[in-house]
Length: 131
Picture 1: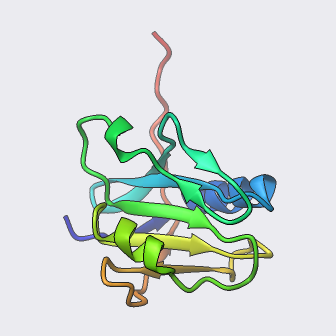
Picture 2 (picture 1 turned 180 degrees about the horizontal axis):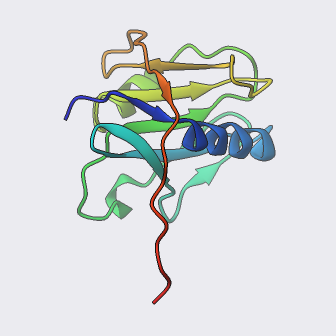
């Protein structure tokens, strides 16, 4: 599936979660619907510290991830070797957020670690009825 963009509300969630977790790293997997990233999946057993976050990919349900997201405790948003290894295992759209965790402090990369454009889209979310 070709990713067309990320929902503004999803990006805002990512930025707020990254800010609230700081200085520990926030991490999750990106889910898409109709080519638009709309959800962040937090895997059970994810460990966070001020130097890294560890996603337990074996805890991933039987679904396909569009990519990953994680924060860095400082302003540097360049992927590390460990980041590139994760990128190679989970989709083709990977977001790294850095301090100050604002709408200008995130970058999207492809699975090879090259910067890619990810438009922020205003998307209406469906209301789900509680069962």
